[in-house]
Length: 316
Image (cartoon, rainbow, N blue to C red; front, side):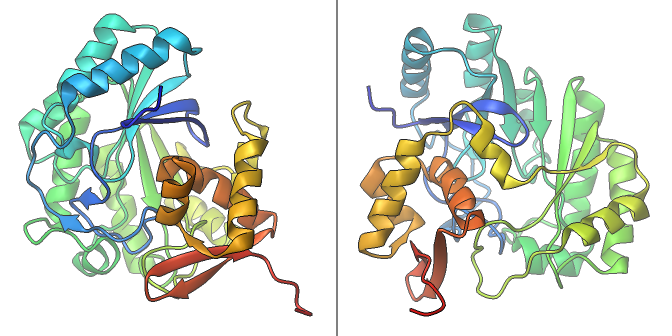
């Protein structure tokens, strides 16, 4: 059976073998982050509705779990902000009632936590992974490029409100990007906000895929270590290197080889590869990260977006 709303399972740096559930069409989100590996947001909104049919998602989940080994986690993520879907709480409740041994994770930017119903809908999850990249107005506008009604102060206050209500684990991801939020003022503002949120883990991350804008610069491992030392918060960790994905049991060489065969014939965008290979963009991204790290492919920035092609030798 071909699945429309499930992807993977994919090897996750944080969640082991993770079966993805995508409740949002590509690319509907409350933010248009400059670094997003899924590409630019095409529908910037805070309007919640049933973007994909609840009953169809449940049908796919039941079929998958009947015919395949259980993953470590079922993870709500995908092509946009999952809490925009009005029925995310119902899907979570269904899984907990019918597949209770599988842990549930929700990857969210947390910008809809001003809505008490959104916060309530996630209370049965085992871990929620919200993001906080900016604790100043300038960084929030430049880095996250939010829907017009959102602001950084409300974002922080609503993460604090969720922390008070949610009894399970919160792993807060902080994405650090050079010249956007890595200066002392922004880092100290982030530390202050994080201390108030009090997450169980703080996960420092930086660019390992081409972002939406050209010329974005990653920060070094040394810089991340300096930030960890500056914050002096014991629950801070730096997310593991992408090559660890290859060690996961579900990393498939046939997919890696198919991607290489495809881009050897012509450069392709992420969406091109998704359509050609009939795989979700999140799943393909896992393989692209490995192939870039192994120096087998390279990127080209063109008018239609970021293209992937075989790595050319210096003597070419």
